[in-house]
Image 1: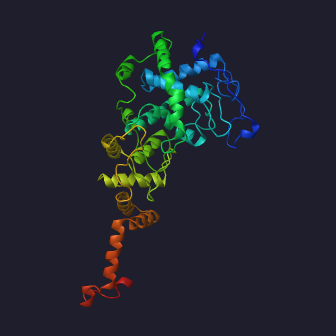
Image 2: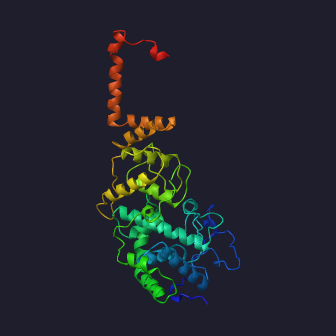
Image 3: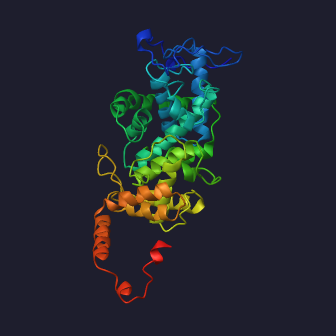
Length: 377
């Protein structure tokens, strides 16, 4: 008989009114009731039986353990799931497309492997939530920020502000100590099979201590390139943004987990700036350079201050992008990069020099050294 975690069970929350429902909401989607499936009673926050909620909690602990999270980090994952869904795997928001244990909106869910087939699958949701937690933990660490920012980035994303920090401080962080004690109890009681070496290796680390990035924790796989999707691409995008590398028009990348033209432009700019082969592919050397640049990036001066980019995108990045575009084969990207470069102080000086040369005839032309009609052929 499964263990019921009585003190962790959440009561049913408030329902949405029909007038509140957004056209992308999954709130009215039918609940799949198959034998053996962990199902909620409705799409409402916390509306799942004690047995289902307890099993969800076990799944989250196991997913955290498999990812090498320590006790406090595992407690943090539980606190996020409790805040977002009340441990109801079938929970869905009425006003957005958010759904599941971590309440991922559709676009974010796609980056973590969630789709129409597994959107409400507890195992898939747990894996996505833990992976997202790790990426947000890394981002907060790179920016010199405390553990409250982990949930802020879950709630707001890496570049926006929808009040996630206040939610973290009021709703998530106050639960961590008690949830950590609960996780410890489960491990001691043998209800969750621990990995002693992994837990020992992480036990002494605080939330503010440096951690390896997700790319460093994983065994290097195939290179990332145009057309790829998933959490690794999303990590790449947030890393490039944090380091000050944007697309060819100077726009920050979307953290959508999709490797497209704009992500490729930022990769090429990074490669050019670090003396790498400019091919837009994130292979072994580019991964190593990203790791080194991340470690070398200065920490934010204060926890509440926005991160400072490594390079001034107005003075340096346009030239990097121009070099990268010149070595590629996309004429549209090159024209855009050239137009951006001409708006910089260096670009205006270059234009002025070209104008001066156009006014004064070339000496070679005056002596007949060049064929005047050569330019027309």
